[in-house]
Amino acid sequence: MNKTLLFVVIILLTACSQQTKKMMVSGNIKGLQKGTLYLQHVQDTNYVTLDSLVMNSTTNFRLGCNLEEAEMLYLSLSEDINADRISFFGSNDNTNINTTLKRFKFDAQIDGGPQQELLESYYEIMSRFKNQRLEFIKEKINAQKDLNLELAEKIQLKIDNVITRSYLYSINFAINNKQSEVAPYVAVAEVYDANVKYLDTINSVLPKNIADSKYGTILEDYINLSLIHI
Image (cartoon, rainbow, N blue to C red):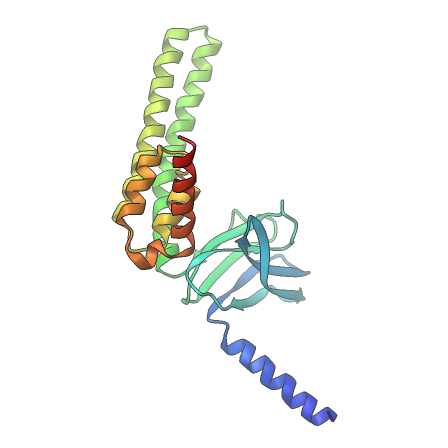
């Protein structure tokens, strides 16, 4: 094969690769001078790289992959399992993520598709439960320091109540949003340790396309495994 023909083949292969990348994520990482950015998903409990970009003297990035369905994706500056990762629900809609190198994960501002918007609305409510629980924990610690065990026990009941309400909210959220892939994701990622009957309730209302999705399948397999051990 002569060099001209080889060049044409490479161009055609590159074009085909770009055409199949239906999910695109772009954005900016303030403060980044040099490094490699990875787009990953979880497969068989491992982070698998779908696309990567060597960044040199630029803070802008653009990555993509061909998704069969909407699922949780991750941006990372390292393939190490313990690396900080920005998680987002990827779909065929374009996603924009702006963050900083210093606080890569925590400064992330994500503008994504409907699944991402729905998940963010869920996390916003869950953060309120978390903050309320932390406040009660502080009160309990202070009561224990003052040796006021009766008050500490009362505060523990409040903590338990917040936890229960957060679980019930998560379950109702999944049921009310059964048309989205976010529903089974919340079930397997956030309330997997809830009573299996609640997980089964979520699973039973999922429409077929969601039940057959990645997280719908994981949810059903988890329920079946849990029932075996009851």
